[in-house]
Image (cartoon, rainbow, N blue to C red):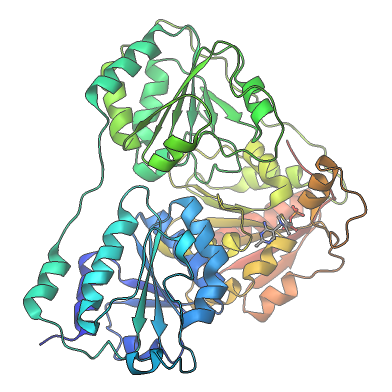
Amino acid sequence: MPTVRDATFDLFRAHGMTTIFGNPGSTELPMLTEYPSDFDYVLGLQEAVVVGMADGFAQASGRTAVVNLHTAPGVGNAMGAIFNAQANHTPLLVTAGQQARAQITLQANLTNRDATRMPHPLVKWSFEPPRPQDVPLALAHGAHLAALPPRGPVFVSVPMDDWDAEVDEAEARAAIERRVEGRAGADPEAVRALAARLEAAANPVLVAGPDVDASGAWDAVIALAERQRLPVWASPATGGVRLGFPEGHPNFQGVLPPAIGPVGQTLEGHDLILVLGSSVFPYYPHIPGPLLPEGAALVAVTSDPDEAARAPMGEAIVADVRLTAEALLAAVPESARPAPEPGQPPSEIPATDPLNSSTVHSALAEVLPEDAIVVLESPSSTLALRNQLRLSRPGSYYFSAGGGLGFGLAASVGVQLAEPSRPVVCVVGEGSAQYAITAFWSAVAYGAPVTFLVLRNEEYAILKWFAEVEGVSAAPGLDLPKLEVAPVAEGYGVTAHRVRDRDEVAAALAAALASSRPELVEVPVAPGMSLF
Ligand SMILES: Cc1ncc(C[n+]2csc(CCOP(=O)(O)OP(=O)(O)O)c2C)c(N)n1
């Protein structure tokens, strides 16, 4: 009879989940014994990094990633990253070891006493199988749920003595072979009605969000915008965790601001706002105002029922974004409206000493290959980067919707492992880098040639900006004097360069992008926010 371990690895194979991200302890070693040679194991040196790498890998590969954590403390360290994965709609099958069944009741050392409750609010499903032979079916349940919309992390706790237990072969096979499909199309009547409203609107606008890319709706959305002559805004950068539209396209207008009043103002003059693949909207901070411009209607298409239900205004269709965009495209004629005015080109920012982050991003734009992928965690220059670059391919931008720092460095390594032939740049603030600093080691250990661009402004610039918005004065803890990243990265084996002049930045980035090893470029930048 096969063991729980045999059935589990067969299940993972059947789902194409042959890379496991983990940080092992004594409670996880029984799972890893005689680790099969057709599987990869990616070691992260701290659990936030383990989950962050898996998040990037799952998003870039489009497949659920398996994570293996060390009982309660491992799950504890991973919680912030699991929160991010939930916000990012990233499918993760998170497993953790548990004490041997005979010692759970007496709470021996390392018992995860309330294993399922611990990550509960952050996952779609949290479970510890009641019997060893139930482990493969529980993992199959988790794998299906993680991949079904809205995609997200699930959690299964596995006692350490379960792996050698025997399972019924026929039952295990049935669990392994099951397939569950999850792409649901929209009601054809709703699509017809929306198509008629779009055609009849005087000045409609499209807001494209991350699920356009994640669902594979990219080409259909471009064709829809072109056929209906729609100006297109990217959903606010706070939740714009992937691109929804090519930023170099003439219909592209820019990135919506992330607050209630400014969104309403930006969309003024439009009578129909069509939102594809975004929540409505990922607002932050609280700047009140009318939710919509006067006389405007809004219709959102999302595969997430919660996103649809919690929006404060407008209508929503809960359905797969790609299927709906394709159906809508088939139902609308070529519009007679004039083509939209093109958006603003990137602003030119004069080079100063130290450079402004916008200037650094313009230098990056100059040397960035067409097929490059950007992973961003540089809070005070998020908008500057979006304004300076014109990323125009699907799967070319990742950002954390959860806002928990540590995503950037870790996810960039996972993205690179999933996309070995595309250059990956991780743009990160020196403060943000600290939350996942050990990801440098994983990049070196697994040969992920990420280019790390570290912006060093010696402060938590975004928090100083928030302090002003919130009317907070003299708050402590907002300065980061002499926080070194380059020598720390070198300690982990990354080749690091320090540059401060614009031409040097461009040259160093071009060389790092062409390198087959992870390299870091650290640039001192002026304090404060960079918006353009
Ligand atoms: C896990 C976590 N802890 C704290 C914060 C709060 N926070 C948001 S931005 C920020 C500062 C980031 O600093 P840095 O990367 O240097 O970027 P800058 O603001 O200077 O651009 C902090 C601490 C957070 N978002 N996530």
